[in-house]
Length: 623
Image (cartoon, rainbow, N blue to C red; front, side, top):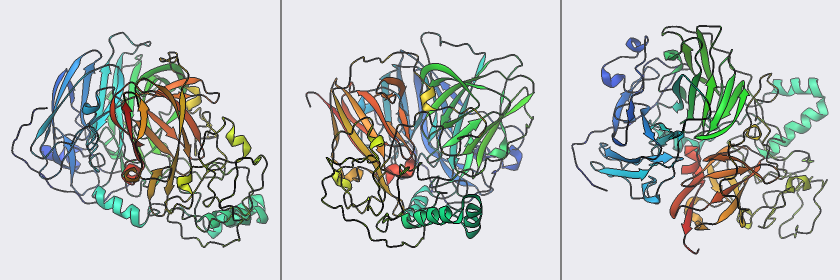
């Protein structure tokens, strides 16, 4: 690393938004363009190509809602410039920190590189001090669609992210005539640190759709008074609502496509008869997007930069940090809407594929708001009639606890119990410590999931799932039975066999845990500061099994190594760098520990990571 110094400038950020936002944004204000003057044509996101690139991190004015704010930008652009490299090159990226007070960093998401080039302060390096620069140098060992972002506090939320495209040495296994990067993100006018404080004080702030008396009446008419009352009582005991789909949504966020708010209508051009490759990247801090282009089939040809057997769908869900490469063949119209609604149906990002600028195709209405079920949360098939959730604080929902008298299972040995068909009435699941240990592949069929001792009586754990499955064929909450063909993990298979070929030599099981009302997130009930590193032996092949005990989805990212997702029978299926974990799921992936050093392993929902859902992974010789 070479350190240089130069003049510094900077400021900070506050808040506000409108539903569709304004057309302006990113570096437009810095160019002297007001929001209204930017309504016609948005400037393209800059592209930097080559093996020697210079990036400057600073602050630039941005206006998405009618009130200018300061964003954290790369080379004055939001998103940052699209970086293009070539597989096999040795690259040098000089990153200068022009912020007045803040340290910064850039993490190259999904790239295989030396640990000291990974860009995570406290693990890879100290970070980049104000007025200084850092040189990232590494060999490019892969190809495909990736992205980069800050790993320093909340700078990613404030705009420090961009696309990274690596051209392959060998031609891809498909043909296309032109390509567009489609980078999705979420913007808030709030200072992200203030937004995090708000989540800690009131985690249910954005949940505007809690059940009403009218909902109860409609449910009773449709299903009977008894079932309706029992279900409402069940939610009340858990102090939860079925509308808790996302922590932060369109009531706080303006959703962007390539740095453009919906009213700005970002446009990518095509000629009739062309096959267009769309490189979708979810660079959001906290948002899952459901993406479709009405009138066009979407053929997914790569996931997280890795080729898959082509899958043709109408729609796909993309978790935070995931990337999908999609082929489309626009025909029959001059313009098509790229529509990306958030998973809670509170807002959307949108753009246009068109034969020329200025065309505005119809934008679909938001789908109906989805509701969670007990099945979705890993409690399906259980009799919860007397379950005591009085100790379980679920997500800012101010419902009274019924105070049922639970069975006391503390200290009870469940190791030899037959849980199949067991009636769980009156069980206090938070107090139940089922002990650590490897779980059989069909554990969900037993109706009971074991949990580590660190979750027992833990004030930072408000839920434990009991009936889990991989659910690889499930499109997800809000996407089932919508009349469209929706992409699932089960439908995707890598275009290659297991690159390692060995069976895992050992298994590590980690539970995704949290307390929604306290907005505390963790692995096994232990936050980052309280947990020992997960140690891997250099060269070993191991299985990591994740169990989602929470009612939220979590995209889990392991730095430095691939996560090879297994199918329900334990066979290699899909290579990823980010593995989505919907609520009520238990999924496994294989890891080849071929990268020495200290690595981050975390939920890629930014505020979940900052609230504790992160572990250090150490790959060591002879560990």
